[in-house]
Length: 198
Image (tube, rainbow, N blue to C red; front, top):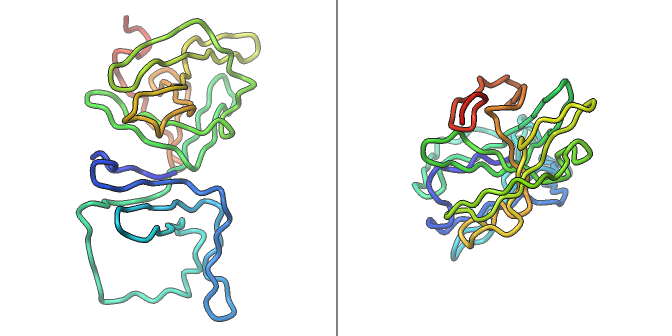
C-alpha cells in the first residue's frame, strides 16, 4: 500500500500505519475525500496525518498553490497495488503492502493475510533463520494438485526491529508466474532463490 523509503523510517522517527477505517473529509457541504485505503503517518512530537490515494480525492476541489516544501525525513509516499498470479490463479491482490528493501535482493512485498488466498497455501516444514528478521516459516502454493514449494513465507515473531512484518505473508517474486505492480507486469528478478539456483 505504501512505498516505504529505503532508509529506515523508524530511525527517522516516522511510522506508517495502514488504517482499517473509512476516512472522509467534509469541506463546506461536500465530501472532497472518501477512502478506505488511507495511511496514517505518525511522527515524533507532531500530530498524526492521514494520506489518501489520489484516486479517492476530488481533484476539482483542489487548487494548486505556489507554496512548496520538502521534508528530508519523510521522502515520498504512494500506494502500491501488488498482484501475484501463479498457476493461472490470483494468489494475492493487495493495496496495502509493506515494502522491505534489503541489500542485493529484490524488493520484498509483505502482504496482510486477508489479501492472500490462504486456501491455496499449505504450510510445509521449511524454516530459515535470518539474523536481522528472525525465523521464517514457509508455505507451498497448491493449485490443481500441483505443488510449488516454498513460494510464500511469514515471520510470526520477527526480531524487534522488524515487527512491522509480523504475521504478514511475502513471496518469491523470482518464482511466481506473474508479479503485477500498479497494473504493470514486472520482469522476474534474479537472485540466489531464482529457479535453477542452489
